[in-house]
Length: 146
Image 1 (spheres, one colour):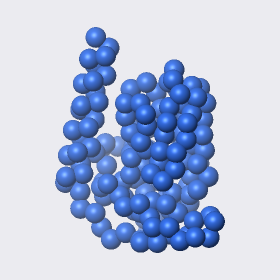
Image 2 (image 1 turned 30 degrees about the vertical axis):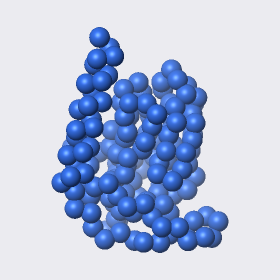
Image 3 (image 1 turned 180 degrees about the vertical axis):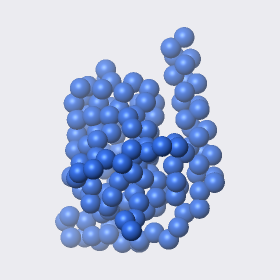
């Protein structure tokens, strides 16, 4: 029963992501970033300009926290600035693999990992998805500051 519910939730999430991607109009993105080692790296193009989730968290401070629970990330969507960094907390019973685009980490249960490179050094403006080895991906919306 729980397995069928998880499968149904995964399908609903995938349909929402695909729908958002099909309707997205990707704007002009900066093409080059300077990484922390001084080499110029291309920025990752956004999957969409706006997220499928209607409401997004807007955390303050230099670290943005996304917690992975069994079946759902929290928050499902978060608005970030170019200077902020990502911390992922694993609240599942298994080790998870996470990948915010160009980086990867393996996180044990009840553990966390902070990616120390600011979002603006590897992501273009728009919505990106934190890929996980579990069911779901949280939306990371890098917005330009006015």
